[in-house]
Image 1 (cartoon, helix red, strand yellow):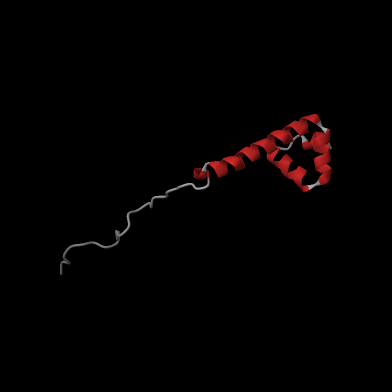
Image 2 (cartoon, one colour):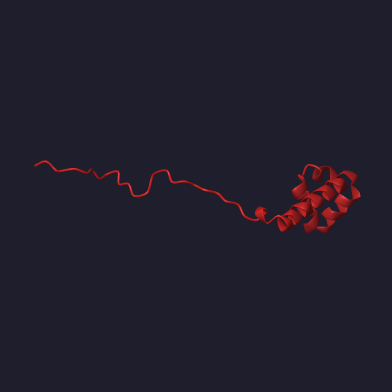
Length: 83
């Protein structure tokens, strides 16, 4: 089972180890998986710590400008009507 679990990325490995006791035991028993699990847990801990220390990480500003200007009526033609 450890050979199949080694194909997982670190985030999925950490989620699996947290969700099921069997996965946690497999990860603890295999030295490669144990190291990857420790690294993933440390990265997540650092990320959460940085969110607390650096409040700018909590908010992001994204701007989407409109494709056309507001208040312009494309179908309206100004001028005098010729009779």
